[in-house]
Image 1: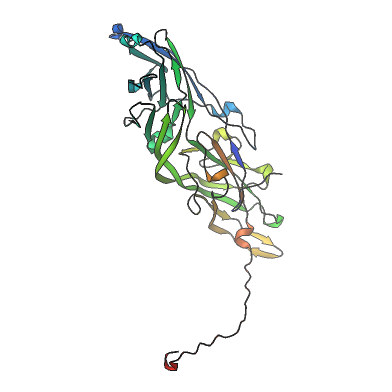
Image 2: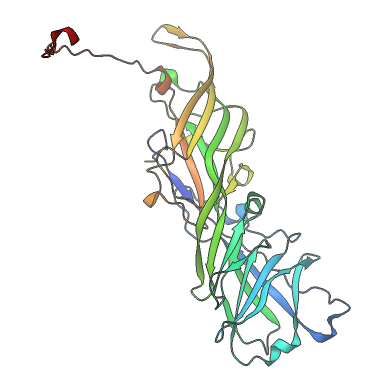
Length: 351
């Protein structure tokens, strides 16, 4: 039995994976004193799908080759920084880099680390250069970001470097259906707008090269994301649940409207989903109810995810169950009668 995320409950789906390989770029004219390295690149999402099965082909993880990734190289034994946040550009969709041949004299292993897309202001946490902080703004968040696994290798025989990039943000989308229990009230909801509020869209990622992992240490910018704006009838029940697109409800995830957000801690009363909808007129128990416009349901994120944390690199699909009874439910009042309390003060004039 499927549970739906109404104002107090939901169902979560997470992740698929895919890859794209790129290599070789034409050598520049001045490359005589340099040694070329080609990159064998894989981009992946980690995790298992829960709930609905997702075809991995629908969500191929890729890099936009119009944007460079960044390369950092540290000598493992000394901690010397050999390459300091160098951008690696592609040509004709293929990535290569030219290392100074002087680096081939280094006998000890080195650590390669990469992230995408390239940003200028990277800072190292200590003198060993084993951990560095990457600031990402909302523009970069829309394009990724991705961080590679650390590659430990000797430079001397290096021609092709394998880099496996993983997503470190969250890919978020929605599915929706009408879960109104009373059959006479079903099928009258028209979704007009869906907005995700207080989504973290900029922050600092601390990447540890030695440990081969990192985490978001600071989120400094929050925004609201309008996921849907249109006029779409909402299907009744789980069998008619559909993905939320930008202006329509669609049958497959590939055509849904999804967005990136930086993983964040969910705080009570902060992050929430706002659904704006109209209600068509209907008859219930012989009484006619006129159409309504601009009704609002709000669904809090708090209390839904394990530990109230969004995990880096995960893809979340939130299932929204819209319940029409929530706006037509009768409100009952009760009254309690107690003893009248008379206060007598020493100065009776100041009762």
